[in-house]
Length: 338
Ligand SMILES: NC(=O)c1ccc[n+]([C@@H]2O[C@H](COP(=O)([O-])OP(=O)(O)OC[C@H]3O[C@@H](n4cnc5c(N)ncnc54)[C@H](O)[C@@H]3O)[C@@H](O)[C@H]2O)c1
Image (cartoon, rainbow, N blue to C red; front, side):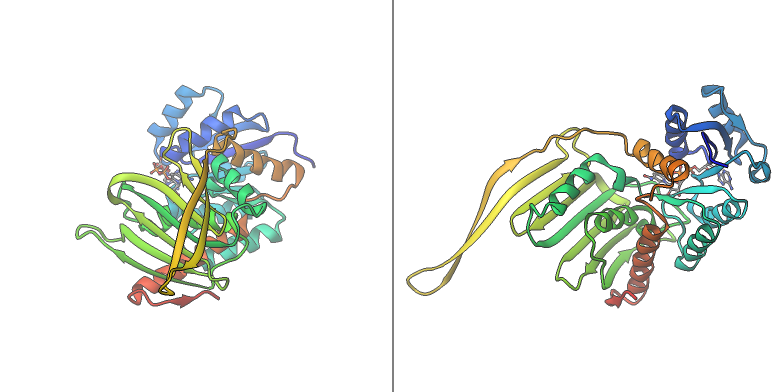
């Protein structure tokens, strides 16, 4: 039977769950909204803010309720696989927070399960729904920046240390999902080096290099150990270079025209004349990324549209990170990606 409004259960009302609930409540595609958080105080707080939501007493209550069409998983990463798998097995569409899982085998299982049951499985690769990133993609798809030469991405801050996932799963998954969205090519190899703070069990600082057959070079710097917060990506092409700075309140994209010419002086020495041309700051409408992501999820369920951040996109990100972790375990060895 066709669904008119999506009855949804949100799992987890922590830092990110609060943003998700605010957006679901405002989205008319969603009908009844349930929340389940193992921490009853958090669920109570949500209820006091949004009286219309219902609080589930257990996850089994959500799973056994055939009126609930979809589950959104915003719980700590190690819980994702079990919670997503149970939801799919009970015939519910799933939107999971990033990363979908921290194991390619588990993610492949979830993707296969969703396919077998004709259910939507999405992951919240939030930056692929970001207005600046989408504007950036128009420059690449309209071939305005020329042959891509490099991408240099920095995502560093004094982060909240997480005992269960390292900085690659927490932060680099954003950069990788953005780069996979911007370009069609996938890396053929990866190398990575990382460090653990002496008091930590997991890596809190990592440098990643993605190698592409086309010659494109990608460098990603992720850290929870930086005194400053930076969210900056530099995209270098033959014709233009673009800086995407997500910290900038309004001018998130700056486009530099670029040219270089080669001449020889009297002594036949090669002289390279680098020139930057016009600098522009494109204007674009800014829409909250989570709003667009939830619209994509709703569209996929109600109108069977193909979601952008689907299970396949999750597999690619997870595969790259798994290979990067293998590389750092082998002292930065270049690892081919199958
Ligand atoms: N897309 C983004 O930009 C973004 C940003 C932040 C976090 N995240 C992701 O969101 C997820 C949650 O992160 P967070 O920072 O909100 O964590 P958090 O610790 O602040 O919140 C997690 C919540 O889940 C609850 N919980 C734990 N186990 C549960 C279970 N089995 N069933 C129901 N509730 C349970 C906890 O009580 C807590 O309230 C992580 O996977 C993280 O990577 C994504």
